[in-house]
Length: 305
Ligand SMILES: Cc1cc2nc3c(=O)[nH]c(=O)nc-3n(C[C@H](O)[C@H](O)[C@H](O)COP(=O)(O)O)c2cc1C
Image 1 (cartoon, rainbow, N blue to C red):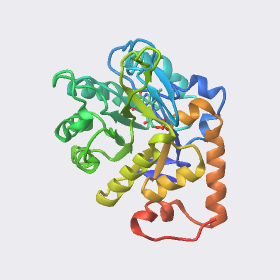
Image 2: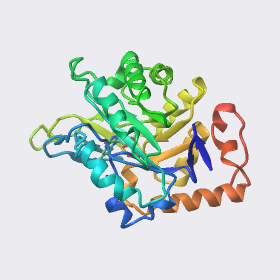
Image 3: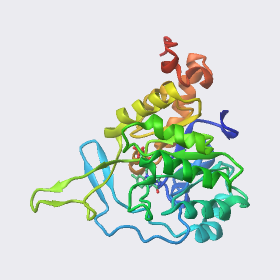
């Protein structure tokens, strides 16, 4: 068992928000109950249509997306998706997104008394309409404000998902902690672009999108390591995980659990393989996860196989 501020996971593997929808498609391919947790797509107060196509592009070692957080809204989630997810015993984490502090607070309030939600994950990588479009996640004061607003309306574990598009991730992480976050998750996508050289046009209709996949793993790992070194708060690591060795790196850097997105889009069954391979590694090395989490930060190097 892994304990994330009261959120109990039977293993450290979870889905990354936005890459497995609300679970219906993945459930045909993977036994959701074998995962540590299922994280739903970013959900807003009202339905969002998202950005126009083209919204995804392949790059050398990752993918770009500019989905624009398309989703059917929290009302639809409550009436249609939550009952489906309640059939499973896997902890369900609801990722929420808003365009103002009030929207985040209202989302938490709507979800508060709903059965079958283990935790909220607050995605702060969204433009703040009132502040002229600057992302909430880039300003420590706004991160604190959003976190406080959700905290006031939510009693269960509260995860704040950080944007990597900042100079000082520790400053942002600290602001989330001060605002009442129980857990931090990171990283969301890194801003990037691709250009079609036959026309000179950006490949994505929006021009700029979010980079995910193996290309971002070293950046994600560095940010997890920095937060684990500076702050006393459980972390969920993600960004480019493809193998159980990648998971181990994140855990040694300080993550108590991990989420996988882009690799699951390509090979959904890898989630189950990861769970098995990690357990095999742990048992054959005779260690507990508590010993592995943050090992590199503490400098307690071992001899593993
Ligand atoms: C197609 C796509 C959609 C995503 N949608 C969301 C989302 O709705 N909310 C969110 O917090 N993160 C979203 N993300 C970010 C992922 O949850 C994750 O943080 C990021 O992709 C890094 O992990 P990965 O390299 O394993 O994909 C999305 C990523 C992708 C590729």
